[in-house]
Image 1 (spheres, rainbow, N blue to C red):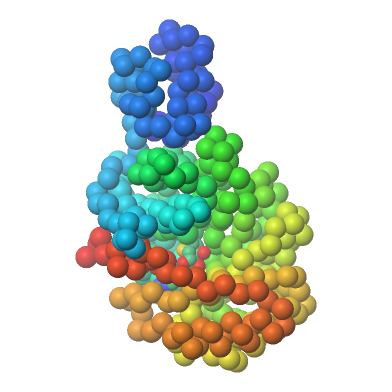
Image 2 (cartoon, rainbow, N blue to C red):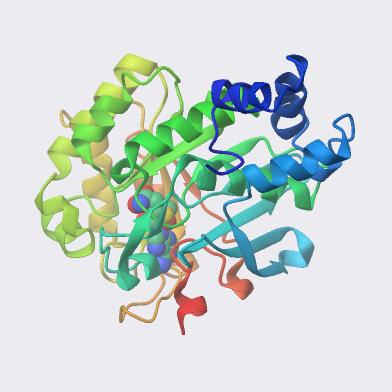
Length: 341
Ligand code: SAH
């Protein structure tokens, strides 16, 4: 069992087995989660106990590389799990908030053509402790700025690893104290899992990677669309909004000439305001970060602005994502590619 994977009852039992007083489990939990401290910094625990816990509940991830960019505002880590599986995490700091982008799997099986992780393939699922540890260790880098947002937008498809992801979300919410709306689960559109997510206890923010207004283009970019086509994905998104009352965000990677024309924008606007969805919709346009495995280029500023304007006409709200971490290969969809070369 690893440090951020052990449950509170199991930790309590472990400490009781060592003959520790009852209050110890509370102290450990408060130090690890309430204060987000490294174990060695929880100084109200006896030194020998800290050493014993360090042995019994080791960290799951070993740091392989750590880089910063954007004048120190973006940090990226490459970790390895005990078996050598590669995991990446990105911390993005802003004047008023800090967001951690976590991986839910080592690699990804979804094979989206424009995504570096998808191009490299699937390695394995991450467990609860490996996911939660990414958030805590990003926090350790800047203890002075509270990490208040977590996005499942690193490597992997979170809804292909449901149980650990939702257990991690509970830990991040209940124990690290991050509010549900500040936790975003981004999915490529695993419709049945999106429907199950609607009955999950916490109203986390759902983001859906759409990338195209029709099934032909979407199936080219997102192979999973052949299994769960647009109508099914939008129906599941609509269901989530109906149950949780939380506006869904649609992500849209902008690829020059592929999905970024005025006609695509017009079709997307009609799709999201028409019978297939017909709810207040928000689209986040993501400039494509070029990857080795796809011969395509990013849409220019002009195309982005034009696309946004057409989409806004029927009442869709639009944001254009500002890329962070480009120079350290920490931007969306770039993770892992460089480390593998
Ligand atoms: N599997 C989840 C999380 C993936 S990463 C999902 O598909 O939503 C989060 C976002 O980054 C997704 O919207 C994904 O489509 C986007 N992305 C992937 N590769 C990208 C690239 N090369 N450039 C820009 N965005 C990319």
